[in-house]
Length: 198
Image (cartoon, rainbow, N blue to C red):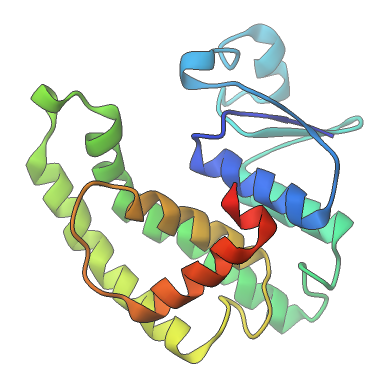
């Protein structure tokens, strides 16, 4: 098993966490941003998007982080982390899609401005708009976690990985945040998992 991507990427972190939870030995190769690699013909033969992560499992190659999480857990941790019950599975799938299409999209601009943009070019209006879009989503998530110990029920699973990586990134930004006691308690439990300290 080989995973391409740098650990500073939220999407690579999701894949690494899934592999560690499944207990699968793997090799990780730094790629993307300062490490380059993704712009080479050899890499683009694996992933034509020139992004990370990319997973190689024998002769099978897969890209897109949430797809990698689903594949790893379905193949190597079925039932334990990838539900066989369809309602449980698609509850988790829903939250994984929400992370990628809604929460990540709202919070991404603030991350880009705080972390990837030089101070003199930072757009504070873009940060404010990103915060304004993200905070209602965090309130929604906090309400959900007031009623559930994990994202898709009472047991840790694949949706927890995707959402926890997003929360890790958002809470790492140098900005105030409103209190979200249920997210905070859940996130503390995520950080207690050996693989949750990726």
